[in-house]
Length: 418
Image (cartoon, helix red, strand yellow):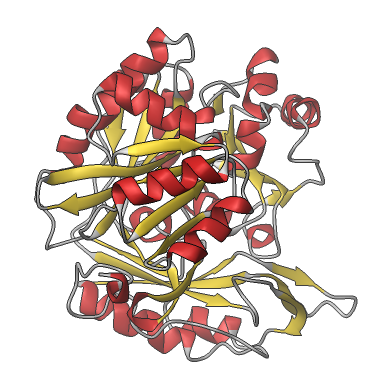
């Protein structure tokens, strides 16, 4: 199978690594890491016409659109209109991530267990909603915000200020409990769940500091209920797929379900319309099934023709290396050393924000720069291997958490808020 992966980040590198096991991989625009395993092409990832033209010229069997912005912009629609199989929702279906208000409406109509919420468009509405739900306050930008549009705080003034900077916002009830990521592969009517993972969102150890796109992740979750993935399919994903069909926008692609495991059971924090990054990285590392066959079946509406995904009896841990200033800003142009050493130590070094300078040196080019992923017999072994490899990589201003997948597992991030 010939595949084309659209995007430039760590998610796309992880997807390309897995697809390359049994498929010919092309990527656009890609990054230096992806370029070592795939043929790169220069394309405007936000232009559906350009992506469709490239896919047609290459004669690919499957296009995988990685990031949310092109999906919300309708890139998958253009590829489908060209008669090419594409894994990724339509513009209409991608509103599950593109608009928090739309997402909450779908959940309500589908009967999905989730936090109570109010959609607010002015300061008076925001103030009333904050008072209704109380602290900790949860304020979500209604639009795309690269994983950083959510503020959880006990500071009411900070909550009001965040809302004022967003325009339309969703104020939500705070869900107390460990957060878990479940990825559902959907063909519009049916879905398979991948193995759950846990992501570490805040920049500093102990779940402190501002939210990021993710500073690390791991799988499996020995402390979670054994049937969690199946429960999510039956109580969350299948009702959501039915509601999206009812609305005339069948969902084809990855439905990311961000959950809080509360005392009253799992409740949805948010939907995304694509794989999470970095939380998909360890999940793919232990996937034994063919990813290309799974995604192609979903893209062509034939998911029932392939077996449910199978995972090896192992654990995987990913540790993110971020640039100076992240998440408020990022630093570019710092020379990166030790990547080859880390790979030789048995880890996958996944590129997220890298580039090659005029001298051909690998340099930083974004907030989250690299992710170091390792497999082990259990979480402790995978964690030790990932951190040992991460120690070999250096660049000026590098930030990383030291407590990814550390004991005790299953803790709630941002404990200082509780």
